Image 1 (tube, helix red, strand yellow):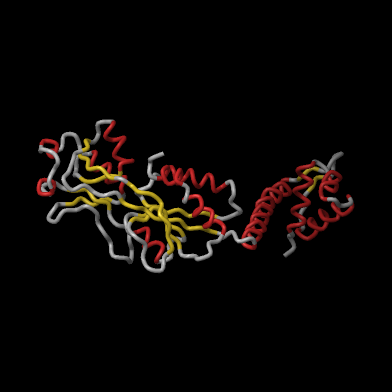
Image 2: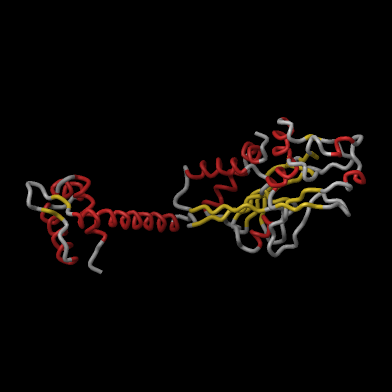
Length: 300
């Protein structure tokens, strides 16, 4: 290959500094070495990079094109160097995170912003999962870390508690259930269609939550879709308090008392590595903070 990164580095320095002499000073080389690098590059590629007819050398059109493409190569090389340094120092190249749809995603993004201040080149890949889909993503190696998984972890998985999440039973203000005496019994609730978010598990057995035997069900993809369906009056069910509270305050939903409420659910973080690498270890320490778990559950 006749094109070298060093030659591109010289070309970039000349363009940024405005002269061969200034480039030589920046690169700590003698001016003749800078001139030789450019002449050799022109000979090797059989092109003219500089118009030397004037008082100062000026990039030709093809020289400008090479400079622009070359800067992209230099940036890629720099990123590669940084990534190799990060790997050598224990930072993984990529961290895959599965996040429960029960959590406030804007709070996840706030945590990513904090991570960016310390990140040494680890690329994050975030996916949303529903119910057992979080554990399924970890067990079947679609994720390195899960945040907000409900129920206790499967065998062989490491975990730490995240937070308790609370639920309320809510319906559209014009729903027929609003006409029944409270607290509502299961036999009354069973008469009306429930809204359920579909478990995103691919291999673990899918689960459902708070559905009554014989009750008609409308299944939607996520908990946010469940909220929308209940606000539209299409069915009833329990919702995380952080989602239901604003809709109740706005008059889009009405909270009803029930005889058999849905107990609070303990959420977990889960991972597989017994000695977590740097990015994973950062998130585990970060998520162990009470203020962070409260923010994720909409309680901050």
